[in-house]
Image 1 (cartoon, one colour):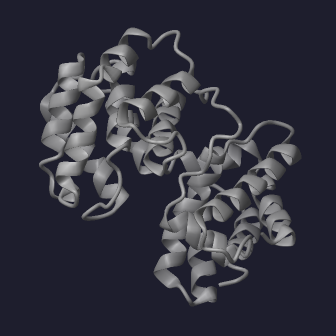
Image 2: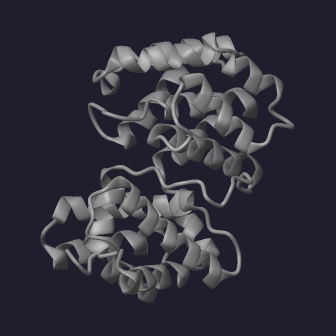
Image 3: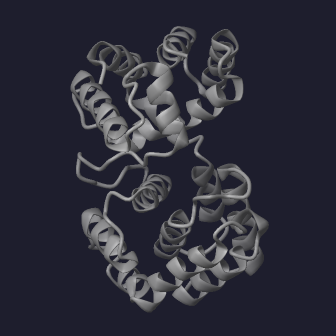
Length: 278
């Protein structure tokens, strides 16, 4: 890890303030999908179950994440109701027929079936009002026989967290050490920002954890790595489009940051720090 770069990246994120950081969650594709569904279909527990289950299948896509979540929205709306675990299961079954899920399709179906056959779905709905987020995280991992820190498990918890934000205007109380879902974009921006030159997943995750810890200290409140992930994932998509052209990437990042509501100074500094080693 490069502590100087960690300090600089964290400072540029801290400069956004808490409200600026949240702006990135509101641009996540799953946020768009469940904002639409919240006013059209079902109730909060069943929407949350749908989001968690779908989150476990958001990998190896035949397309991008925006398409994945948009297709889920369309399938759910076409189904017409979301009031039971049977509705969730049927929506997911139809969703698995969509071409964005063509890769590793049977593997994804098997994972989803486990969530219903192992009673995770019924347990989640029955205990929705009083269950703690950590318990949901533990039980999801157990139902899929995966480590809690597996990327898809953590990402499913991020979806759950974002749905809670949409429904209740607040985040869930996850432990502060919940890891970042370490995917291509997270690894890419770790490299282009210079916080680490390692390609080892644990090293990348540790570097981002250091960033989040410093941002939390700067802002005087816990800032989850799930929030950092939104900034990094969206920025990584843009950087990946323009790499290795640093100037073009920075211009595109500034334009995007301006579009979502950052001021010129915030946008410029963040774009610079995320591409310093590009």
